[in-house]
Amino acid sequence: MWESIKQKFASLTGRIPRPSLSAKDSGDSGGLSKIFFTIVGFLLILILIIGLYWSREPAAFSVSQNAQSRLRMTGSEYVVGSTTTATMIRTAETLLDKPGGYLSNDVFPPGLYLDNIPNWEFGVLVQLRDLSRAYRESFSRSQSQSTEDPDLIIAEPRLHFDNNSWLFPPTEGQYREAIERLESYLTRIADQENVDAQFYARADNLSSWLLDVESRLGSLSQRLSASVRAQRVNTDTAGELSAAQSTPVRQEVSVKTPWLQIDDIFYEARGATWALMHFLKAVEVDFQGVLEDKNAQASLSQIIRELEASQRSIFFPVILNGSGFGIFANHSLAMANYISRANAAIIDLRSLLSQG
Image 1 (cartoon, rainbow, N blue to C red):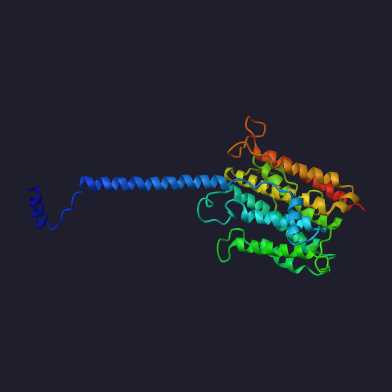
Image 2: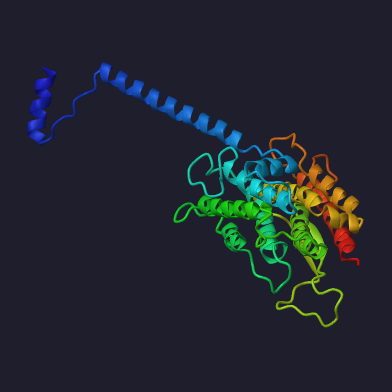
């Protein structure tokens, strides 16, 4: 009866009533909603677990064993420069082959929302770029007028490629080509019959690269220390009366790292010190004669020890930013302490290397 009344009403008003859902239909709709939200919840949990796994920093490795295994694959024996070159290759491979791969250019979760490891990758990458430049400009050349190595001519700019490029071309492809060129260079310097490829372990070469390292560590130390607001005296032109700068600034400046960037700078420093620790361990092998001649082994060992201390485990899920002398720790200041001490030791090492 009611259905006939509804039909007549619809004919009069020109509207067709929507059929009412039965109890069975509403039950099916509710079941589908539960399945949908269950799947979404499961995917979110899975992404979170994968993100936690990908956020683990790579472990340290033995530079000597790494070099021996690479030389063994080509049937070569140790030559000067092979340990540092093999360490550089392994470090670059770590960027691409660690859990999750290279994350800095990810556009999908979980890599999209992770920021600690991408900043760690950038710290490693900066050290790789500096060392690759030193290889191209000095380590592989006997003097400033000598010819550049053909493999390093390609490897160095490939490592300087945009670290955030996802496609056209992807960053990973450029870095992989740099690794292939470094492997070719390693094979050539290990070949006793190939005199075109060389690695020169000299005090001036090492000192030149350490000057870049000193500048990088000094910058990282200042950025880490800025986690706590401080008043700094402007010393930009100190020490020279005729010195000038393009834009005048105040005699005192207040510096403070934005809250959201504190962990970014911290993990960038962790990556930089991780890579530098391995590079200096390799230098300890390849430049052994130079270090002994300058009586500089102890200085280098102290630098490595400070960098190893900077890699200690973090026993808290977030980077704490206490006030320095407050009740909470300040991870950035602790890292800045290790970096500053390593930087001071590098200055002493460069002084020893410059002595006749």
